[in-house]
Image (cartoon, rainbow, N blue to C red; front, side, top):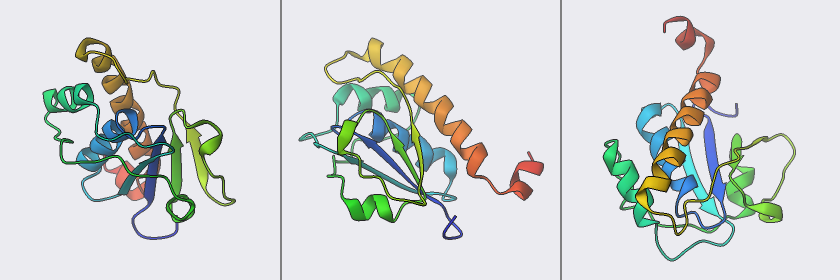
Length: 141
């Protein structure tokens, strides 16, 4: 990784649901060990209220976040880029680790449909944290 803190960028189309929930989990669970970013290829006007509600249920407040536009600079300056359905709009640069998380889109869904997506994102983020943790931290777990 390029610095003492790896940077992770979560990307989805609207940057209003999946990527915001993932960023919320990584921020909360990573405890400052990771620089967290999120962006969208076609950002929405605001965050999905069902995503905000679902995250609040697990004690994570993402209500102050706002969708951000994906820029090549943001991608190029990240160590890991995790896409969640941004299609061909995701810029690809050599030397960056890419992953694609196949997740249902919570857009237009009610809270009952968003909860399982939230829980799946949490499991993926926990796995990512294990992967990013230095070997000496993993040995102490």
